[in-house]
Length: 242
Image (cartoon, rainbow, N blue to C red; front, side, top):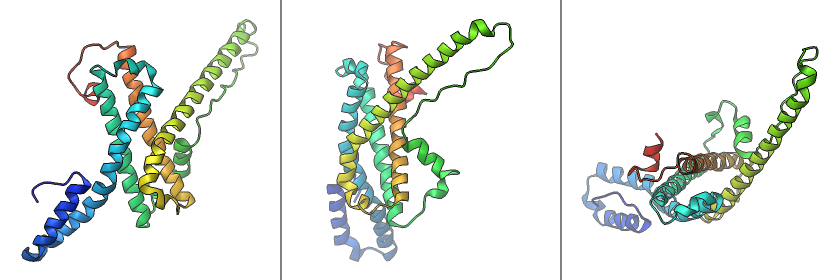
């Protein structure tokens, strides 16, 4: 057993090798290895295969949701799109693994947040546009001439905000619908017994991951469409962003 396993098959082989050797090993080594396998098992058997399935799904979704990036699918920027997909898939797999482990062990996560319900609302509820209040400068010499223009500007801002919120909510729902079947494949039995609090934490995990996904995709779109980067900087996307 010379290296850390990276697939379920390698883990099973190493556990078999360990079972064959354990009687000849000192007790402290046996205990240490058993603890290591206990820690590695959920990571290798759940996180790794789920991550591997999520990567192509997320990568395909990027090209669908950000069509301006589709023209780069066969050139070097595709490497950056793959890096984003791998990061988001890895993050979501790890976050959910830790979340379900806490659920199984009866660990409460509410204490992680200063205002739990506010965090739940931020990550799980649809984004809603809000109208700015019309200022009141009655009596000011410019007011009668300016107030109709100000009212029109505020209404235009509100309509633009509505469009942005609708887009955000649509893309978020598409993201959740894309990754959900894979999550259910690995954690479906656990979700069948979720309490209301568990669903809230699950919603936070998905919502926060979506924002990370959205921010990275928007940054990538900005780099290519606004900065007009055309030459491969020979860096990873995340190195270039810093």
